[in-house]
Image (cartoon, rainbow over all chains, first blue to last red):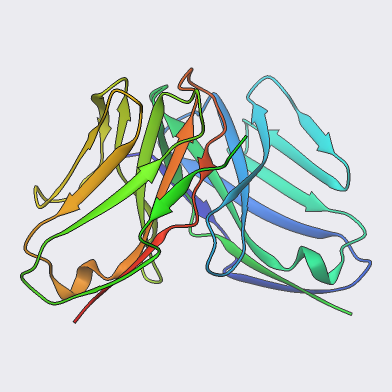
Length: 112
Length: 113
């Protein structure tokens, strides 16, 4: 069955550094992947979507890559700030319907 | 545009009871999905409704059910509550065209005692 895995449960970095989060998928080839941010006690908020024919996508300080050979997506936050501290989730939309399969999430903590 | 709203925000029930949660999607969105989030299992898909029809279903027992009304508002129901049903229940809406991003509500925190 389709599975998405995020390698790290937690990531601690220093303010100003680049945070890199990893999402791996197995047993299928998604047409696209989505990344969400979730703050404690709140619903996830959509950040970026990358399609399989797009190697890279950027939005302000955020960058997402999609490597279909490695079956992996990387999510980067450059010049990280304490306000970037949150849980980041990658997800794949299943079968064109409104069913998202989520990874377990990576809790990012940016220290001043 | 108003965001996705969910009511109630918090709920405490006892085992064996049933509960109904409500979700109002963003105006114009026809797809509503429901998710259960727990610390151990993460975010898990329950079901999705599009134009009043269930389009996708997750791997949850039949105690979990839902419906969508003609105005796209959706409700989910859990019968015969178990302790393990304690979770944050999230509703998300999207226009429903396939690769759409989903817009999540704040969730309903259900505690089963």
